[in-house]
Length: 363
Ligand code: NAP
Ligand code: FE
Image 1: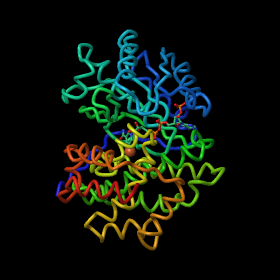
Image 2: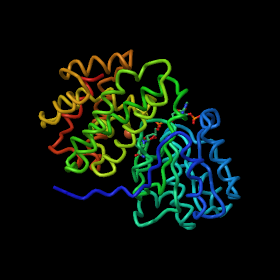
Image 3: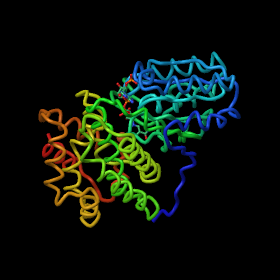
């Protein structure tokens, strides 16, 4: 068993935590690049809080506010070009996993002026300028993972960059999540749940990551029943955010496996949001897993009597079913069967037929 655990990000949690701790940004330099999505960070107050903190500290900043969902390499290129042009000292990612991941990848290219987009896939030794993460979804856990997932239109898929970029500080302010639309809350929340489950069942799991996964699952078991509630309290948002951040810590050690690997094709070809894509596959994945002791522990921490109840719950969350043709199942299964980095995280051998069966039983 691999008994190491490494997660070097300083985490600061609570309403107004950025303003209360803005002095932590001061040593990072004189120029910052803010990276965010098109609209939500301006509306939920996170972008205004960052701008105010930087103005108070006399730190110059530049804004890239066009990160799309599942950011493309083209977007990473645009962000890093701006960062290099302005010679920024650090990057602040604000938003869901897409802007956070885009910040990490751009921070690598900004630090290595001669590096190209291809190096993101091929040169693991490249380091990044400091990244600060301010999550506004409770889902990806990117605030505590070293991963950055990008969309590669040449390869027609999503994939992780090969560098490991942990944010140096993550500010978790639950007030940014208060007005999140229910569908985004559900999709992102189920991404966090997938991280807890896949990390707990991973071949890299150890006593340290399992302790976190069990606590995260227990927390998620409390959140699961209000995922679709119209209006959440600040405490409820905080619990979701903490569960998601713990889930990030779990996968920073254990990684993700089949649902994530198989979900990438559903996102790329069927435009299904990342968390939903994982969530659709979760029941059949648990059915497939051999470690029934851990599977039953997951169900009990989430407060489900059995796997069927869990499946019924997920179906209720996602509504209408999607369907795949026989040809699509073969293509997506072949693709997953070549994803060695995800397959190695599953503790037993997985065949292309196993993968096709999970797709078929799900969709
Ligand atoms: P996202 O793609 O970052 O954002 C989804 C939508 O949510 C966007 O329309 C965004 O609007 C909106 N949004 C974000 N915060 C909001 C708020 N507080 N209120 C209202 N709307 C809000 O979603 P995500 O699920 O968080 O991130 C998905 C990405 O993360 C995928 O690329 C996935 O592969 C990656 N991921 C990364 C890791 C990791 O470890 N790094 C792990 C799992 C997944 P705007 O565009 O206007 O901001
Ligand atoms: Fe994920």
